[in-house]
Picture 1: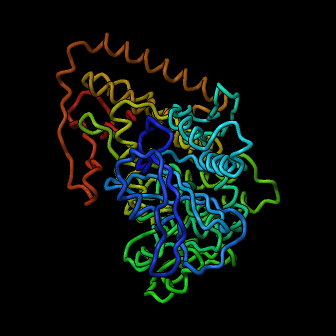
Picture 2: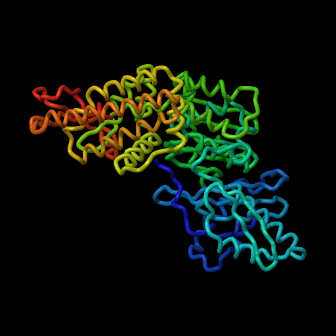
Length: 521
């Protein structure tokens, strides 16, 4: 659904490099060494990576503690490769691991172990080189399991947590989200979320590189199931500061030592979150972003995030997911069947929630929502099962929302009355596609109470009986059912989304069905 992660690779990491700090503004960071020594793209290691390893002014006053941070390299397809860094200021060098896996805690742990082996080489049973060989030879672990590195000959062993990207991030297991929630107050978190929902130009700044990584990456993660589709640079090196004045959406992290240069640039309608000062600057159109969100979504976030409680587990992630469901969960109401293909109708989406009309109209213009819909349609039309956390939350909130419950009951009533007759008029392929769509929509309410499940079973039993009776009583009449294409010119949108009207049954048809095949959904 627009995720910018690469497919799971066949190895833990691509390369480990060591870089020295820049001596002056004119003399940048330099590559010292890299592993494995047969890594092919050496020019990238020399020219690109060192700049990201020291993303601050050469004379910046740094914190004394070891800094763990991560940067992102984006390829021509917009997919990410991560650089996980460990920077002890007194050493004046930075260790960096390049990998396609977004496993922050695991790689920070590996870097700590590597530093430990180097610092205590005489007392350790294995060398840092042996450790790297063991890691590189290991298989990528299963999501949500332990990654074990062991040397059978000496009995040396270390374990690291490997995250499950299919689950919501938890506190304190997810280091980024833990730091984000600790460092940024709820009002600023909500303001930043609103700015991202309107795809603004966003700068996050701090003197701590670890917080830049934590806040930028967590803010993007809390858009789930959508994904930020624009420029994303969690820690920005001095050579890329011009992006801050670019006339396009971006989410970037800038070290506080570079902000003086940034503020000298022409910054119009830019959101600046200063983590250290606990301040967020909103200018121009950005001033009204929170007010322009539907009030029920803002209220949901305020009620959960501002509670005087210990936010552990999925508490924070679930709060934002609940708000996202309020904002986009109604996309199902706009799914229809047209010419054997499940489509998304913009007009139906906007009209499904009249009180949110202005917001939904703007949402249709955003790339993050467009990519979400594009991927959902691909899944539906290919028959892929959709059972992610987002759909489960839609089901939970549907159960508690009286309006949604009423809509679902009305859908079931119409389905019993008209759906059976209409299914008999469809070709085998259309019936199969209809079944997939129906099954998908029902998946969102799989968590309803027992009596709701029983009602669903009874409804499906009634449908089967009606279908059987209809076939027996109307053999040979299928030829009287004809279709015509009454599609109109669709709203101009991306070509990736099929935006046609659903087919309708001719008025002289012997089947008294509704005007849209969409009723079977």
